[in-house]
Amino acid sequence: MALINEFEPASSDVQRIHGPVTCGYRAFTADGRRILQLDTYGSAERAIPNKISQSVQLDAEGARALLDIITETFPDITR
Image 1 (cartoon, one colour):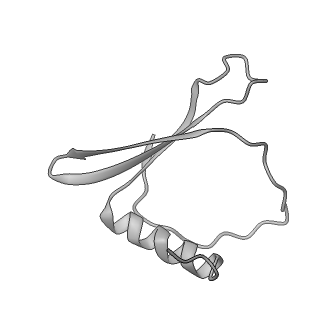
Image 2 (tube, rainbow, N blue to C red):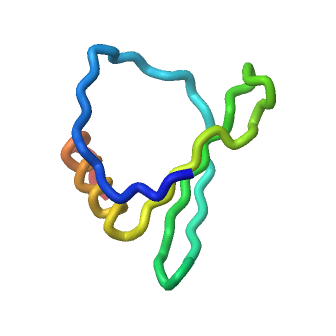
């Protein structure tokens, strides 16, 4: 599990779409900070299907940074 505290652009020659999985989410308060946790679950083909595969956490600062990246990447998205 990781609490993301910084985003930086990354380059790669590989540009492919991964297989679809489900992402669960939950929000909670710890040490006075609001946290959003995202958990991805293994695909049906994995040895243990639906087991948590990766978890990432964002606090308010990380969420703002990710929101900026999403807005820049998908400018047509509006609420």
